[in-house]
Length: 383
Ligand SMILES: *[C@@H]1O[C@H](CO)[C@@H](O)[C@H](O)[C@H]1NC(C)=O
Ligand SMILES: *[C@@H]1O[C@H](CO)[C@@H](O)[C@H](O)[C@H]1NC(C)=O
Ligand SMILES: *[C@@H]1O[C@H](CO)[C@@H](O)[C@H](O)[C@H]1NC(C)=O
Ligand SMILES: *[C@@H]1O[C@H](CO)[C@@H](O)[C@H](O)[C@H]1NC(C)=O
Ligand SMILES: *[C@@H]1O[C@H](CO)[C@@H](O)[C@H](O)[C@H]1NC(C)=O
Ligand SMILES: *[C@@H]1O[C@H](CO)[C@@H](O)[C@H](O)[C@H]1NC(C)=O
Ligand SMILES: *[C@@H]1O[C@H](CO)[C@@H](O)[C@H](O)[C@H]1NC(C)=O
Image (cartoon, helix red, strand yellow):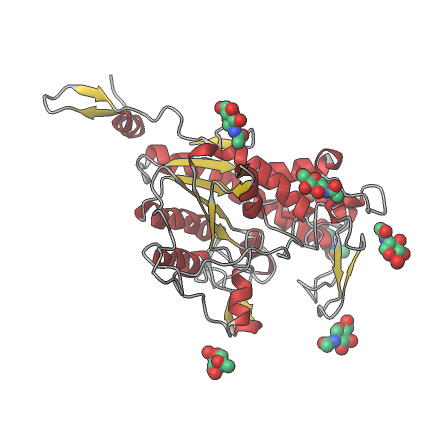
Protein backbone atom coordinates (compact mmCIF):
# COMPACT_ATOMS: atom_id res chain seq x y z
CA UNK A 1 0.00 0.00 0.00
CA UNK A 2 1.23 3.49 -0.79
CA UNK A 3 0.64 6.57 1.32
CA UNK A 4 0.81 10.20 0.29
CA UNK A 5 3.37 12.37 2.06
CA UNK A 6 0.54 14.14 3.88
CA UNK A 7 -0.87 10.90 5.28
CA UNK A 8 2.61 9.78 6.33
CA UNK A 9 3.26 13.04 8.12
CA UNK A 10 -0.12 12.79 9.87
CA UNK A 11 0.75 9.26 10.91
CA UNK A 12 4.13 10.43 12.14
CA UNK A 13 2.49 12.78 14.58
CA UNK A 14 0.31 10.01 16.02
CA UNK A 15 2.96 7.32 16.45
CA UNK A 16 6.51 7.21 17.72
CA UNK A 17 9.15 4.58 17.08
CA UNK A 18 10.30 2.91 20.30
CA UNK A 19 13.96 2.00 20.98
CA UNK A 20 13.35 -1.60 19.83
CA UNK A 21 11.85 -0.37 16.59
CA UNK A 22 8.17 -1.06 17.28
CA UNK A 23 5.58 1.66 16.71
CA UNK A 24 3.98 3.07 19.86
CA UNK A 25 0.98 5.36 19.99
CA UNK A 26 1.85 8.79 21.41
CA UNK A 27 -0.47 9.57 24.30
CA UNK A 28 -2.76 12.38 23.18
CA UNK A 29 -4.13 14.89 25.62
CA UNK A 30 -7.65 13.61 26.01
CA UNK A 31 -9.22 17.06 26.45
CA UNK A 32 -6.92 19.81 25.16
CA UNK A 33 -9.44 22.60 25.80
CA UNK A 34 -10.97 23.30 29.17
CA UNK A 35 -11.74 26.84 30.35
CA UNK A 36 -10.59 25.96 33.88
CA UNK A 37 -6.99 25.19 32.87
CA UNK A 38 -6.01 28.72 31.81
CA UNK A 39 -4.49 31.29 34.14
CA UNK A 40 -2.92 33.62 31.54
CA UNK A 41 -4.89 35.21 28.71
CA UNK A 42 -2.44 36.83 26.29
CA UNK A 43 -4.05 38.87 23.52
CA UNK A 44 -2.85 40.54 20.32
CA UNK A 45 -4.72 42.68 17.83
CA UNK A 46 -6.19 46.11 17.14
CA UNK A 47 -8.87 48.40 18.60
CA UNK A 48 -11.33 45.50 18.68
CA UNK A 49 -9.16 44.12 21.52
CA UNK A 50 -7.01 47.04 22.80
CA UNK A 51 -7.67 48.10 26.36
CA UNK A 52 -5.22 50.96 26.95
CA UNK A 53 -2.03 50.39 24.96
CA UNK A 54 -2.49 52.94 22.17
CA UNK A 55 -3.47 55.40 24.89
CA UNK A 56 -0.11 54.79 26.55
CA UNK A 57 1.71 55.64 23.31
CA UNK A 58 -0.35 58.82 22.92
CA UNK A 59 0.24 59.89 26.52
CA UNK A 60 3.96 59.14 26.40
CA UNK A 61 4.93 61.03 23.27
CA UNK A 62 4.92 57.91 21.10
CA UNK A 63 7.07 55.73 23.32
CA UNK A 64 6.10 52.20 24.30
CA UNK A 65 5.50 50.98 27.85
CA UNK A 66 8.72 49.65 29.40
CA UNK A 67 9.00 45.85 29.74
CA UNK A 68 7.27 44.85 32.97
CA UNK A 69 4.36 47.29 32.61
CA UNK A 70 0.95 45.75 33.30
CA UNK A 71 -1.48 48.12 31.61
CA UNK A 72 -4.57 49.23 33.51
CA UNK A 73 -8.15 48.18 32.98
CA UNK A 74 -10.24 50.64 30.96
CA UNK A 75 -13.96 51.40 31.08
CA UNK A 76 -13.81 53.51 27.92
CA UNK A 77 -12.21 51.56 25.08
CA UNK A 78 -12.86 52.05 21.36
CA UNK A 79 -16.09 50.04 21.78
CA UNK A 80 -17.39 52.52 24.33
CA UNK A 81 -16.92 50.40 27.45
CA UNK A 82 -14.87 47.48 28.69
CA UNK A 83 -13.37 45.25 26.04
CA UNK A 84 -14.02 41.55 25.39
CA UNK A 85 -10.86 40.04 26.96
CA UNK A 86 -11.63 41.93 30.20
CA UNK A 87 -15.07 40.30 30.16
CA UNK A 88 -13.41 36.92 29.66
CA UNK A 89 -11.50 37.57 32.90
CA UNK A 90 -14.76 38.54 34.58
CA UNK A 91 -16.73 35.56 33.29
CA UNK A 92 -14.08 33.00 34.26
CA UNK A 93 -13.47 34.46 37.73
CA UNK A 94 -15.58 33.93 40.82
CA UNK A 95 -16.28 35.45 44.18
CA UNK A 96 -14.74 33.15 46.74
CA UNK A 97 -15.62 33.77 50.40
CA UNK A 98 -16.73 37.28 49.58
CA UNK A 99 -13.54 38.09 47.66
CA UNK A 100 -13.31 38.58 43.88
CA UNK A 101 -10.90 35.93 42.64
CA UNK A 102 -9.98 36.04 38.97
CA UNK A 103 -8.85 32.77 37.42
CA UNK A 104 -6.94 34.52 34.65
CA UNK A 105 -4.58 37.44 34.36
CA UNK A 106 -4.97 39.42 31.15
CA UNK A 107 -1.82 40.47 29.30
CA UNK A 108 -3.17 42.57 26.46
CA UNK A 109 -0.73 43.61 23.71
CA UNK A 110 -3.37 44.82 21.23
CA UNK A 111 -2.94 48.36 19.92
CA UNK A 112 -5.76 50.34 18.35
CA UNK A 113 -5.01 51.05 14.71
CA UNK A 114 -2.63 48.09 14.43
CA UNK A 115 -2.22 45.88 11.39
CA UNK A 116 -0.47 42.52 11.28
CA UNK A 117 2.69 43.98 9.75
CA UNK A 118 3.88 47.45 8.90
CA UNK A 119 5.89 45.88 6.08
CA UNK A 120 2.56 45.19 4.35
CA UNK A 121 0.04 47.90 5.24
CA UNK A 122 1.57 50.62 7.42
CA UNK A 123 -0.92 53.30 8.50
CA UNK A 124 0.44 56.63 9.71
CA UNK A 125 -0.70 58.00 13.08
CA UNK A 126 -0.15 61.75 13.54
CA UNK A 127 -0.46 61.68 17.33
CA UNK A 128 2.71 59.58 17.65
CA UNK A 129 4.32 60.73 14.40
CA UNK A 130 4.84 57.10 13.34
CA UNK A 131 2.83 54.21 11.93
CA UNK A 132 0.48 52.52 14.41
CA UNK A 133 2.57 49.86 16.20
CA UNK A 134 1.93 46.51 14.44
CA UNK A 135 1.47 42.96 15.76
CA UNK A 136 4.57 41.39 14.19
CA UNK A 137 6.96 44.32 14.68
CA UNK A 138 5.74 45.69 18.03
CA UNK A 139 3.18 43.56 19.90
CA UNK A 140 5.06 40.25 19.69
CA UNK A 141 8.47 41.73 20.64
CA UNK A 142 6.77 43.58 23.53
CA UNK A 143 5.39 40.27 24.79
CA UNK A 144 8.77 38.52 24.40
CA UNK A 145 10.47 41.36 26.31
CA UNK A 146 7.84 41.12 29.08
CA UNK A 147 8.31 37.36 29.63
CA UNK A 148 11.49 37.64 31.78
CA UNK A 149 10.74 41.17 33.06
CA UNK A 150 9.97 42.21 36.60
CA UNK A 151 7.02 44.50 37.26
CA UNK A 152 8.06 48.12 36.91
CA UNK A 153 8.60 49.84 40.29
CA UNK A 154 8.14 46.62 42.24
CA UNK A 155 10.28 46.38 45.39
CA UNK A 156 11.20 43.68 46.05
CA UNK A 157 11.17 42.85 42.34
CA UNK A 158 8.20 40.68 41.33
CA UNK A 159 8.07 38.98 37.91
CA UNK A 160 5.41 40.44 35.59
CA UNK A 161 4.42 36.88 34.59
CA UNK A 162 4.03 35.27 37.96
CA UNK A 163 4.04 32.31 37.57
CA UNK A 164 5.55 32.04 34.09
CA UNK A 165 3.11 30.92 31.40
CA UNK A 166 3.30 27.21 30.59
CA UNK A 167 2.16 25.22 27.58
CA UNK A 168 -0.92 24.13 29.55
CA UNK A 169 -2.02 27.26 31.41
CA UNK A 170 -1.53 30.06 28.87
CA UNK A 171 -3.83 30.80 25.95
CA UNK A 172 -2.95 33.24 23.17
CA UNK A 173 -5.58 35.00 21.09
CA UNK A 174 -5.03 36.91 17.86
CA UNK A 175 -7.72 39.07 16.25
CA UNK A 176 -6.24 41.20 13.48
CA UNK A 177 -7.43 42.31 10.05
CA UNK A 178 -9.92 45.13 10.50
CA UNK A 179 -7.32 47.77 9.67
CA UNK A 180 -5.27 45.61 7.28
CA UNK A 181 -8.28 45.15 5.01
CA UNK A 182 -9.80 48.61 5.53
CA UNK A 183 -9.35 52.25 4.73
CA UNK A 184 -5.72 53.47 4.29
CA UNK A 185 -4.73 49.84 3.73
CA UNK A 186 -5.88 47.20 1.21
CA UNK A 187 -9.33 48.74 0.64
CA UNK A 188 -7.82 51.98 -0.67
CA UNK A 189 -4.84 50.28 -2.34
CA UNK A 190 -2.56 51.88 0.25
CA UNK A 191 -0.49 48.73 0.83
CA UNK A 192 3.23 48.72 0.14
CA UNK A 193 3.58 48.24 -3.62
CA UNK A 194 3.23 44.61 -4.63
CA UNK A 195 1.81 43.37 -1.32
CA UNK A 196 -1.29 41.16 -1.51
CA UNK A 197 -3.84 39.65 0.87
CA UNK A 198 -1.74 36.48 1.05
CA UNK A 199 1.03 38.53 2.67
CA UNK A 200 -1.42 39.47 5.40
CA UNK A 201 -2.57 35.87 5.96
CA UNK A 202 1.08 34.70 5.96
CA UNK A 203 1.84 37.31 8.60
CA UNK A 204 -0.81 35.76 10.84
CA UNK A 205 1.03 32.41 10.77
CA UNK A 206 4.36 34.17 11.35
CA UNK A 207 2.86 35.60 14.53
CA UNK A 208 2.01 32.07 15.69
CA UNK A 209 5.56 30.95 14.79
CA UNK A 210 6.90 33.46 17.32
CA UNK A 211 4.35 32.55 19.99
CA UNK A 212 5.06 28.86 19.44
CA UNK A 213 8.82 29.47 19.72
CA UNK A 214 8.24 31.28 23.02
CA UNK A 215 6.46 28.18 24.40
CA UNK A 216 2.80 28.81 23.52
CA UNK A 217 0.70 25.74 22.68
CA UNK A 218 -2.91 26.92 22.89
CA UNK A 219 -3.90 29.44 20.25
CA UNK A 220 -7.18 31.08 19.33
CA UNK A 221 -7.32 32.65 15.88
CA UNK A 222 -10.32 34.94 15.52
CA UNK A 223 -11.29 35.46 11.89
CA UNK A 224 -12.19 38.84 10.40
CA UNK A 225 -15.53 40.43 11.25
CA UNK A 226 -18.27 41.01 8.64
CA UNK A 227 -16.98 44.50 7.89
CA UNK A 228 -19.47 44.94 5.05
CA UNK A 229 -22.09 45.17 7.81
CA UNK A 230 -20.25 47.89 9.76
CA UNK A 231 -21.66 51.37 9.01
CA UNK A 232 -18.20 52.46 7.80
CA UNK A 233 -18.19 49.90 4.98
CA UNK A 234 -21.85 48.98 4.42
CA UNK A 235 -23.77 49.67 1.22
CA UNK A 236 -26.67 52.11 1.14
CA UNK A 237 -29.37 49.49 1.71
CA UNK A 238 -27.42 48.55 4.84
CA UNK A 239 -27.12 52.22 5.86
CA UNK A 240 -23.46 52.83 5.09
CA UNK A 241 -22.34 56.26 6.31
CA UNK A 242 -20.83 59.10 4.26
CA UNK A 243 -17.81 61.19 5.23
CA UNK A 244 -16.97 60.42 8.85
CA UNK A 245 -14.28 60.48 11.55
CA UNK A 246 -12.55 57.38 10.17
CA UNK A 247 -12.85 58.25 6.48
CA UNK A 248 -13.32 61.99 5.97
CA UNK A 249 -13.30 62.01 2.16
CA UNK A 250 -15.10 58.74 1.63
CA UNK A 251 -16.09 57.92 -1.97
CA UNK A 252 -19.82 57.99 -2.61
CA UNK A 253 -20.18 54.55 -4.19
CA UNK A 254 -20.91 52.56 -1.03
CA UNK A 255 -21.92 49.52 -3.06
CA UNK A 256 -18.38 49.19 -4.40
CA UNK A 257 -16.92 49.56 -0.90
CA UNK A 258 -19.24 46.93 0.60
CA UNK A 259 -18.56 44.50 -2.26
CA UNK A 260 -14.82 44.79 -1.76
CA UNK A 261 -15.03 44.42 2.03
CA UNK A 262 -17.22 41.36 1.69
CA UNK A 263 -14.77 39.94 -0.85
CA UNK A 264 -11.72 40.59 1.36
CA UNK A 265 -13.14 39.35 4.67
CA UNK A 266 -14.68 36.17 3.29
CA UNK A 267 -11.59 35.37 1.22
CA UNK A 268 -9.08 35.70 4.05
CA UNK A 269 -11.42 33.82 6.40
CA UNK A 270 -11.53 30.98 3.89
CA UNK A 271 -7.72 30.98 3.87
CA UNK A 272 -7.72 30.69 7.70
CA UNK A 273 -10.23 27.85 7.49
CA UNK A 274 -8.03 25.75 5.20
CA UNK A 275 -4.51 26.95 5.94
CA UNK A 276 -4.75 26.47 9.70
CA UNK A 277 -5.38 22.68 9.53
CA UNK A 278 -2.83 22.50 6.71
CA UNK A 279 -0.11 24.16 8.81
CA UNK A 280 -0.95 22.12 11.92
CA UNK A 281 -1.70 18.69 10.52
CA UNK A 282 0.05 18.46 7.18
CA UNK A 283 3.05 20.80 7.38
CA UNK A 284 3.51 20.06 11.10
CA UNK A 285 4.47 23.70 11.58
CA UNK A 286 3.41 23.78 15.26
CA UNK A 287 4.01 20.27 16.70
CA UNK A 288 1.69 19.40 19.62
CA UNK A 289 0.04 22.81 19.58
CA UNK A 290 -3.73 23.23 19.74
CA UNK A 291 -5.62 25.76 17.63
CA UNK A 292 -9.17 26.97 17.90
CA UNK A 293 -10.41 28.95 14.92
CA UNK A 294 -13.11 31.23 16.34
CA UNK A 295 -15.59 32.26 13.65
CA UNK A 296 -16.37 35.78 14.87
CA UNK A 297 -17.59 36.56 11.34
CA UNK A 298 -20.53 34.21 11.82
CA UNK A 299 -21.12 35.24 15.44
CA UNK A 300 -21.40 38.95 14.54
CA UNK A 301 -23.54 38.11 11.49
CA UNK A 302 -25.84 36.14 13.80
CA UNK A 303 -26.11 39.17 16.11
CA UNK A 304 -26.93 41.30 13.05
CA UNK A 305 -29.68 38.93 11.95
CA UNK A 306 -31.11 38.20 15.38
CA UNK A 307 -30.47 41.26 17.58
CA UNK A 308 -33.16 40.51 20.16
CA UNK A 309 -31.24 37.42 21.22
CA UNK A 310 -28.02 39.34 21.92
CA UNK A 311 -28.71 43.05 22.45
CA UNK A 312 -30.57 44.36 25.45
CA UNK A 313 -30.48 48.17 25.57
CA UNK A 314 -33.77 50.02 25.27
CA UNK A 315 -32.81 53.38 23.79
CA UNK A 316 -32.75 52.48 20.13
CA UNK A 317 -34.99 54.90 18.29
CA UNK A 318 -36.03 53.04 15.16
CA UNK A 319 -36.90 49.45 14.44
CA UNK A 320 -33.86 47.71 12.97
CA UNK A 321 -31.49 50.54 13.85
CA UNK A 322 -29.93 48.41 16.59
CA UNK A 323 -27.81 46.61 14.00
CA UNK A 324 -27.23 49.18 11.26
CA UNK A 325 -27.18 52.25 13.49
CA UNK A 326 -24.65 53.07 16.16
CA UNK A 327 -24.39 54.83 19.49
CA UNK A 328 -21.61 57.39 19.25
CA UNK A 329 -21.93 60.01 16.52
CA UNK A 330 -18.87 62.21 16.05
CA UNK A 331 -18.31 64.91 13.47
CA UNK A 332 -15.67 64.39 10.82
CA UNK A 333 -12.86 66.03 12.76
CA UNK A 334 -13.90 64.48 16.09
CA UNK A 335 -14.43 67.82 17.81
CA UNK A 336 -17.93 66.86 19.00
CA UNK A 337 -19.53 63.49 19.66
CA UNK A 338 -23.16 62.85 20.56
CA UNK A 339 -24.43 59.64 22.10
CA UNK A 340 -27.52 58.55 20.18
CA UNK A 341 -29.16 56.72 23.07
CA UNK A 342 -28.04 59.48 25.39
CA UNK A 343 -25.37 57.30 26.90
CA UNK A 344 -27.71 55.15 28.91
CA UNK A 345 -28.76 52.43 26.54
CA UNK A 346 -25.81 51.67 24.33
CA UNK A 347 -26.33 47.95 24.98
CA UNK A 348 -29.09 48.14 22.37
CA UNK A 349 -26.61 48.65 19.53
CA UNK A 350 -24.39 46.12 17.78
CA UNK A 351 -21.97 48.93 16.84
CA UNK A 352 -20.67 51.63 19.16
CA UNK A 353 -19.56 53.80 16.25
CA UNK A 354 -19.04 53.46 12.49
CA UNK A 355 -16.46 50.69 12.97
CA UNK A 356 -16.38 49.30 16.49
CA UNK A 357 -18.55 46.61 18.06
CA UNK A 358 -20.37 47.89 21.17
CA UNK A 359 -19.69 46.80 24.73
CA UNK A 360 -22.70 44.48 24.60
CA UNK A 361 -21.34 42.89 21.42
CA UNK A 362 -18.04 42.48 23.25
CA UNK A 363 -19.86 40.74 26.11
CA UNK A 364 -21.32 38.32 23.58
CA UNK A 365 -17.88 37.74 22.06
CA UNK A 366 -16.46 37.14 25.55
CA UNK A 367 -19.21 34.67 26.53
CA UNK A 368 -18.56 32.73 23.35
CA UNK A 369 -14.79 32.96 23.83
CA UNK A 370 -15.14 31.22 27.20
CA UNK A 371 -16.96 28.39 25.41
CA UNK A 372 -14.18 28.38 22.81
CA UNK A 373 -11.63 27.87 25.60
CA UNK A 374 -13.82 25.15 27.04
CA UNK A 375 -13.85 23.14 23.82
CA UNK A 376 -17.60 23.58 23.45
CA UNK A 377 -18.24 26.50 21.09
CA UNK A 378 -20.26 25.90 17.96
CA UNK A 379 -18.40 28.89 16.48
CA UNK A 380 -15.02 27.20 16.91
CA UNK A 381 -13.17 24.66 14.83
CA UNK A 382 -10.63 22.79 16.94
CA UNK A 383 -7.47 21.80 15.15
C1 LIG B 1 8.65 63.65 21.67
O1 LIG B 1 9.24 62.83 20.68
C2 LIG B 1 9.86 63.55 19.63
C3 LIG B 1 10.28 62.56 18.54
O2 LIG B 1 10.66 61.35 19.08
C4 LIG B 1 11.02 64.36 20.18
O3 LIG B 1 11.62 65.10 19.15
C5 LIG B 1 10.48 65.32 21.25
O4 LIG B 1 11.54 65.98 21.86
C6 LIG B 1 9.70 64.54 22.31
N1 LIG B 1 9.05 65.49 23.21
C7 LIG B 1 9.09 65.36 24.51
C8 LIG B 1 8.34 66.39 25.29
O5 LIG B 1 9.70 64.47 25.07
C1 LIG C 1 -25.77 45.21 0.65
O1 LIG C 1 -24.85 44.52 1.50
C2 LIG C 1 -25.36 43.31 2.00
C3 LIG C 1 -24.26 42.77 2.95
O2 LIG C 1 -23.04 42.68 2.28
C4 LIG C 1 -25.70 42.36 0.89
O3 LIG C 1 -26.25 41.18 1.44
C5 LIG C 1 -26.69 43.00 -0.03
O4 LIG C 1 -26.94 42.16 -1.12
C6 LIG C 1 -26.17 44.33 -0.51
N1 LIG C 1 -27.17 45.01 -1.31
C7 LIG C 1 -26.90 45.55 -2.48
C8 LIG C 1 -28.04 46.23 -3.13
O5 LIG C 1 -25.80 45.47 -2.99
C1 LIG D 1 -20.84 51.57 -7.92
O1 LIG D 1 -20.08 50.38 -7.84
C2 LIG D 1 -20.78 49.24 -8.31
C3 LIG D 1 -19.92 48.02 -7.98
O2 LIG D 1 -18.62 48.18 -8.45
C4 LIG D 1 -21.05 49.41 -9.79
O3 LIG D 1 -21.77 48.28 -10.25
C5 LIG D 1 -21.86 50.66 -9.99
O4 LIG D 1 -22.01 50.91 -11.38
C6 LIG D 1 -21.20 51.86 -9.36
N1 LIG D 1 -22.11 52.98 -9.39
C7 LIG D 1 -21.76 54.14 -9.91
C8 LIG D 1 -22.80 55.22 -9.86
O5 LIG D 1 -20.65 54.36 -10.38
C1 LIG E 1 -27.25 43.54 29.01
O1 LIG E 1 -26.78 42.25 29.38
C2 LIG E 1 -25.51 42.26 29.99
C3 LIG E 1 -25.12 40.81 30.22
O2 LIG E 1 -24.97 40.20 28.99
C4 LIG E 1 -25.54 43.05 31.28
O3 LIG E 1 -24.26 43.07 31.87
C5 LIG E 1 -25.98 44.47 30.95
O4 LIG E 1 -26.10 45.23 32.15
C6 LIG E 1 -27.31 44.45 30.23
N1 LIG E 1 -27.63 45.80 29.80
C7 LIG E 1 -28.81 46.37 30.05
C8 LIG E 1 -29.00 47.77 29.53
O5 LIG E 1 -29.68 45.78 30.66
C1 LIG F 1 -14.14 70.49 11.40
O1 LIG F 1 -14.78 70.18 10.19
C2 LIG F 1 -15.61 71.20 9.69
C3 LIG F 1 -16.29 70.70 8.45
O2 LIG F 1 -16.99 69.53 8.72
C4 LIG F 1 -14.81 72.46 9.44
O3 LIG F 1 -15.68 73.49 9.03
C5 LIG F 1 -14.09 72.88 10.71
O4 LIG F 1 -13.24 73.96 10.46
C6 LIG F 1 -13.28 71.72 11.26
N1 LIG F 1 -12.72 72.07 12.55
C7 LIG F 1 -11.47 71.85 12.87
C8 LIG F 1 -11.06 72.25 14.26
O5 LIG F 1 -10.68 71.29 12.12
C1 LIG G 1 -31.90 61.82 23.90
O1 LIG G 1 -32.06 63.14 24.36
C2 LIG G 1 -32.61 64.02 23.38
C3 LIG G 1 -32.59 65.44 23.94
O2 LIG G 1 -32.86 65.43 25.30
C4 LIG G 1 -34.01 63.57 23.01
O3 LIG G 1 -34.55 64.41 22.02
C5 LIG G 1 -33.93 62.15 22.49
O4 LIG G 1 -35.24 61.65 22.22
C6 LIG G 1 -33.22 61.22 23.48
N1 LIG G 1 -33.02 59.94 22.83
C7 LIG G 1 -33.32 58.79 23.41
C8 LIG G 1 -33.07 57.58 22.59
O5 LIG G 1 -33.77 58.72 24.52
C1 LIG H 1 -17.06 23.65 30.37
O1 LIG H 1 -17.59 22.41 29.93
C2 LIG H 1 -17.94 21.55 31.00
C3 LIG H 1 -18.41 20.25 30.40
O2 LIG H 1 -17.43 19.75 29.53
C4 LIG H 1 -19.01 22.19 31.84
O3 LIG H 1 -19.30 21.37 32.94
C5 LIG H 1 -18.53 23.54 32.34
O4 LIG H 1 -19.58 24.21 32.98
C6 LIG H 1 -18.07 24.40 31.19
N1 LIG H 1 -17.45 25.61 31.71
C7 LIG H 1 -17.63 26.79 31.15
C8 LIG H 1 -16.92 27.93 31.81
O5 LIG H 1 -18.31 26.95 30.15
